[in-house]
Image (cartoon, rainbow, N blue to C red; front, side):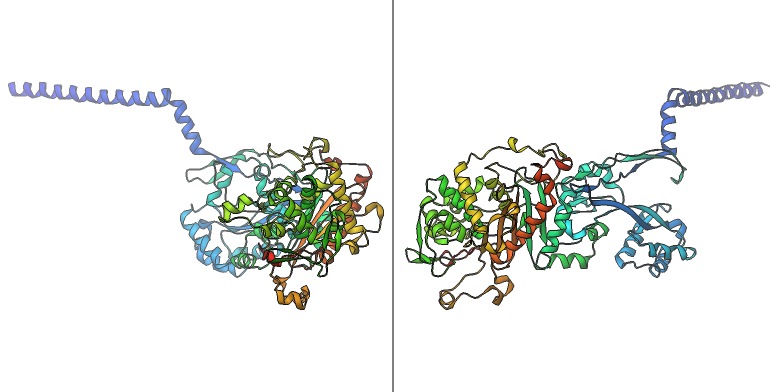
Length: 640
């Protein structure tokens, strides 16, 4: 009996301990449940909601780009895309093989889709190809039963209605590369495109807009069940340019037969760019759609450089157009307009002979005579008298040598040499003969067509330091738009000196002995003034000079001179300026001046009402390269 009572007591103690342990565990479990469901309820409710609801970023529509009249230069159009869902397709490779029989798919596109199908979730759509034609969409629709998992989506793509006519200004958009990534989450959206050139890149942030959000309910696998809420983003801002598309197209048509050329038209009083063209060009729509390797190689290897905006990035010896800056420098440094030099056709400096373009010379020349007939000897003489540094000082004041500050990316500066520049850049001393060559815009001197237009504007507007601009509105918060002429800073040039320069430029075109007389505008109310220029790109040997310099048409294209002209109109009250360069075009008077005449006539026709009203750019909502050649100084000559 005793052992039995002992076992009973032992069992009772064990049962009590076990019961106590269970109660302790149950208390801990209940406490934990209370903590999770009551104390931490809000936290876990939020976590559960986040697992059930997803927020997705929505790309905003990109802002349009328009010209001064509201003509669309860059818009968004419907973009048909074909997508594929792996879990619906089952055998992705087989479906892609059948799809290639319906539409044209490149091998790299197929390889990309196969790669993405392995790393993405099975229910996530993969873009196979975009920018489909309606015919391709129809063919896919007809063959849909044989293409499981394939569907058509509708999006937006960038379109440029005028294609090459505006390529160098408007630019283009393309896919986001790794180096483009910033903190902006929009850049990580599949298929999102950003500006890569021109205005599209300069004002990309404004054009891009801000993203919206879509709140969707998903299941445990992440599949979308339904959209709960949608907040549209802010569309990109419209960018309005000072350009006139009608003038732009006219110029493009006028220079279409030239292998390489550039034309710039500015409002001389405000700096508003009315046209800026470069040929050859490219089709920006090809970049928006996606350029093939073959297309890219064709553009890069084109000897006429279609990807380069020659108006802002082409650097050329200005030839005799530079004589405007030299003449002004002479006047500003004490050489009078009636300073006379005899031109026998050459000038001797030491043992070197510097030639005038007119073999037997011009005779006695003063400033107006020399500008009118583009006499090199007069400019050799005054360049030697005032020196290269004084010439450089005036040239830079007129806007030559440095980027102009136009709101267009990729602009290049030129080169206005000085003694210090040569010493620092080349480690050599300056030679007297080099000053003579600079006097006719050759040697080391390099400018862009845009810089030459700015120089002309600053001469004809009374010495105001205009800066060229394209966007009508203050978009980036830094650039000033549409300044009134009276608000533009003065260069403090002597008005009498400017009057003399204008007289000489008038006679270049309208005097019977002017180098551009053949391009004079008959209507006196629309007449133009200007300066011709012919820049050498090859050395003329002594033997050739003695037997007669070969004509341009007898030379290989790349050995021909560049043809230049800068001009303005109306001649009695300057309002518009033009700068023309035709690479290896020959003579400035025979090739560039006729282009300038047609351009200024069309400009005045298009802006006739504004000019008649005495406007300065307030209409329509406004408020307010080439080869580097250094010829031998002894062989240098300029031609009108």
